[in-house]
Structures are given as structure tokens and as C-alpha cells.
Length: 418
Image 1 (cartoon, rainbow, N blue to C red):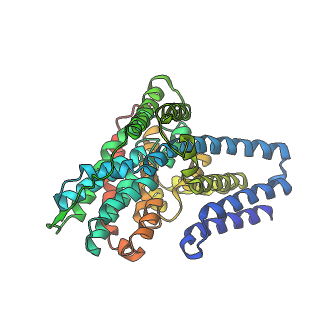
Image 2: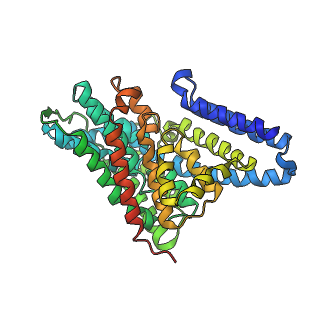
């Protein structure tokens, strides 16, 4: 009885995530509400007759995972919030763009920029800034849809090889399924799949685009310094993790604290109304709360035993094939709970197979416009982009995804399995 109630609440929560744009209720609110409600019910009416101490132990384990993810994302998003609020990123993009460029070359530049930027920041910021660049060019609707489609795919592809770029990659890394060295093997297949999609989407595009760089705003030395600290933190995180196994969370919090101290020193002689630490308030807490709610829901799913159902596909198919379809499934089921579910189900896979799963769940959501945060944001910003107009390009997207997945499989062959 209790199991049925909890499963019904979980199912309702995921339905509300899918229809968020219809009911206009933020998914962070619904997931947090149902996630906490499920655990409260588990305490009041113990599942399988377990003691409160056992349920508390299960909840503590779930909370530890949530806290680690929360703090890491908070640190990374604070850096981006500061640079974004200062217009540093947009200003830099405007300065490097040429005055005249072919539509085909622009396709590759946009894809490359979205890929690179999403690797070192959150997908939300990478999508918004990439869209701002494209929408300022006043393209016709068909071409704008193609550029937007490429941005969505590139943003989702950019984060799969770095723990700073994609939440699911971070989750798989924190679960000790892959190392940073393994993840870096995904860079080549991921960027190749983006370039392949750019080639397909640019067929028949032979025109010119004229772009006026905006140099009216100065780039402050303080902003450059903080950008350098951000990049140094990213590369320091990668290096220290590989060389000395320093937890990424610790390195990023150190980088954040260093940024606060340096900025405080640089700003002390300036007449500013806002303290550097205040930029923590500008990060998207609804995103962080959404992850909390989702992980609470997935934790509840594990305790009622439903996660074992996810293993059935792996009983029928080899992991290499099952992972491919799990990626496609992530276009309809949010990849965060999907990844969390598979991790908690403890599927038996080696590092090579986890690498293909990392690519699949990171990029597979691109197959549908509602399958990723990047797609949902793009649909809300670009009026011409609808579920149907995006679906018309599904053949190109599926081909690019397949190319990247096959590439991730061959990249995994470079891993030595003991």
C-alpha cells in the first residue's frame, strides 16, 4: 500500500516536470515537494517494516550525495553569475566576431563556441549566450531554427567530457565509475559529432551574414582577473584530481574563496554598491533545488525497489547497446534522475561501458526539444522553434548522436581494464 502511494507520487512528480510549460509551475517546486513528501511518508509508514534508524541511514546517504553536488554547482555557478552580470562573456564574444562571415562558417563557429563554453560553465548560461549571438543576426526563421538546433546539441555535447560541464558526468565521476582521464577521451567523439551535425545542417546555406561588433563597453581588469581565476580553478581541479586525487568539490570551493579574497582587494578602492560575495544570490537556485528534489525522488525509488526495473534492459542487451537506448530514453525522461537511477541500481559495467553511458545520457536528451534544459530554454527564447519544427531535424540529430556514441565506444577501447 505504502509502496503504491510513493510510486504514484513519484510518477506524478515526473509528469509535472514534463508539462511544466503547460501548468506554469516550476519543476523545482514540484520535485522538492514530492521528494520530501515521499521520505516523510517512508518515516511515518516504514517501507517493508524497516526501522526508523534504517530509513535515517538511507536518507543520510542520499543527503550526502545531494550536498556534494549542491556545493560543487554553487561554486561553479557563482563564477558564471559574476562574469555574466558584468557582461564580460557577451562583450568578449562581440569583440571576436568578424564583421562579415558566411552562413556555413558561422554554423561551425556557433557550434564550436557553444561546445567550448558549455564545457566550462553551466548549460543554461551557455545556451542563453549562444542564442543571444545568433538572434542578434536577424536570420530568417528556417535558418534560425537550424542554428538553434546546433546550439542545443553542442551545449549538451560540450559538458560530457568534463565534470564542470554536465551534472550527469559529475554524478558518474563522483560514483567512481570513471576517472577524469577516462572522461577526457570523450572530447574527440563529442566535438566530431557536433561538426558532423554542423555539416548536415549547413547543406544549402551559401549566403553571408553581417555582424557589427559591439566595442562600446570596456572589459574591466577586475573581470579579467576573475575570469582567469575561474579558468585556473577548472584546470587546477582537473590536474589535482588526476595527480593527487583531490576531490573536485574541495578545489572548486578553494577557487571560489580565492576569487572572493582577490575581488575584495581589487574592489576596495572602487565605489561599488555590491559586494563580491553577493553574487552567490544571483545563481539559479531553482536549478539547484530541482536537483535536490529529483535526487530525493530517485532515492525514494531505490528504497521501494523500483530501480531494479531499470536493469531489465541490461539483461536483454549488452551494455554497449543498452546504453545507446538509455541515451534515447533520456530525451523523454530527465537525464539526472535516469543517471541517478542507474547508479543506485548498481548495474555491472566496466569503465569502458560507463564511458559510453556518460556520452549517451549527456547528449541523448538532444533528440527532443523537451529532452534537455538547453532545449527548453531555446524553445522559450526562439518563437520559431517548436516541438514539431525541432522534430523535423530529428534525422540529423539521431545521425550525429549515433556518430558520437560510436566514437565514444572506440574511445573506450583505449581504457585498460584490469
